[in-house]
Image (cartoon, rainbow, N blue to C red; front, side, top):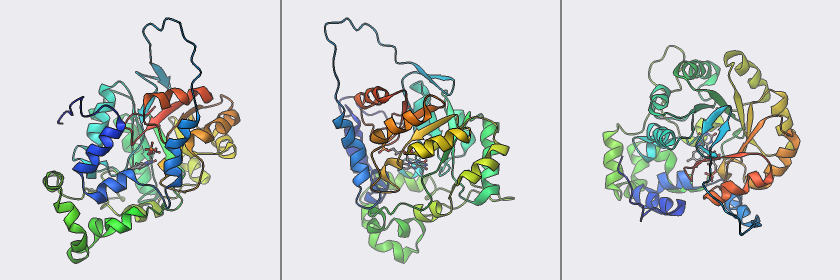
Length: 344
Ligand SMILES: Cc1cc2nc3c(=O)[nH]c(=O)nc-3n(C[C@H](O)[C@H](O)[C@H](O)COP(=O)(O)O)c2cc1C
């Protein structure tokens, strides 16, 4: 992969503006956007500003050791990469390259079910811990097949995302013609093609990569090719997970389970009762239920409820190292990041 010059990328906001120039609007807005009025999306970032440091100065700092552990594995700093569906649409390397980069940085990677790359190839690309995030897209049998493959490939934890009972209404997507571009006829696509043609570099790479990738890890019984990639709404509508599902998932996965999408003490306690090895305080980056609290604001309630009985991760709005420092100040937790591309 082409390396970006350090003078061009000083912080995550720089990466965001490079991405905005590089990919068509439909792809950028899928990555960047949130649900409805995007109140929670904005609040996730803004809420970090409410937390201030109280410095104790005139002390020698020395070398800082950022290493920590998550689910028993050591990582080089307290962030891992959160799952990001459809990464292969943004770059042909997609999930494989993101996992490789996480491993080179000494940290972990969570692979989304909505992946254009085979989970075996993603696992093989990284030296770091790799976890598999499960949606029930394709039904229970497809999920059981993916769980077995994930175990055989060496994924060390299963992440179950519980905040997608319905698809978030991401208002940027219909405006950009995302459903038409992904699944529509050529006539339906026509009005939305200029934004795609305006990005010949991305378009060439996309076409050379074979166009819209299939969901390589969602296989119906007896099928060998992955499920065709659907629009986000359709995919998420078919992926409702309930606490009852955790029971049968337990029968087919004996390793650690992480419950992602916890925002309240009640759900946190339920996750502990269900035997979660870790929970992730998350509102899906404001992409699901708009109007819920910022993830960092929900963290103290959840930490108090679990009272050390399980590991606690959080994601949402983490955009720089200072944000990572702020969360443990609210108790013992680590961060996961996705749009910042640095998570733990
Ligand atoms: C483009 C995109 C795709 C995502 N796909 C998934 C997914 O497939 N599964 C999942 O559990 N979370 C998914 N998420 C949510 C992230 O894992 C994470 O919770 C969220 O992005 C954190 O918010 P932030 O990126 O604004 O910091 C996705 C987020 C983005 C931005």
